[in-house]
Length: 180
Image (cartoon, rainbow, N blue to C red; front, side, top):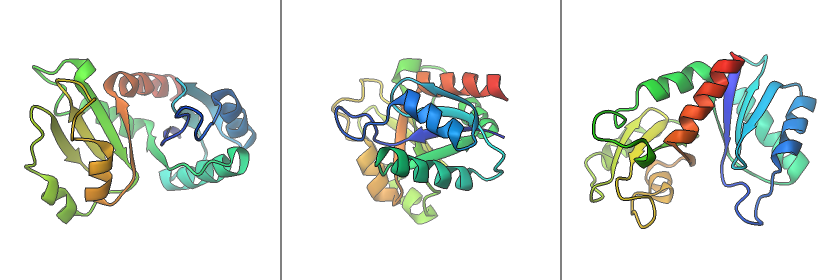
């Protein structure tokens, strides 16, 4: 099975350093195949015999602690799940410029009550749509200065998340498709 692993809050300046070449090597040594990384911000495409994204998540998180002494949340999606995320972006149609789009990948599905509590909140021209373990985001005036941020969603939904630009999400989808 091909998976995409998204590491949260690594390589932020001098904090939580996880060199991608060393990560690729450690993952290969741990038995993962076809390991590829994209950029330096913790985007990994890999193959595993494990059939559960949860099992892959736990193994990668243990490996990162053991090899790099970094305790980072990892969000894992299968290649087919990522393809559906790309195909189903409700904000990617019509007026949206790709550079305004992002996706927040949540570690777990938030409670329905928490999702409902956020529904209808407005942030100027910024928009969001929560679907399962993803939040589709649109920032027509840029991310900087927006009150619609990861901390808001993590606090309201009770689960960690990590955000990727639409360009990175679509590139990871392409990479996963080449491995599959």
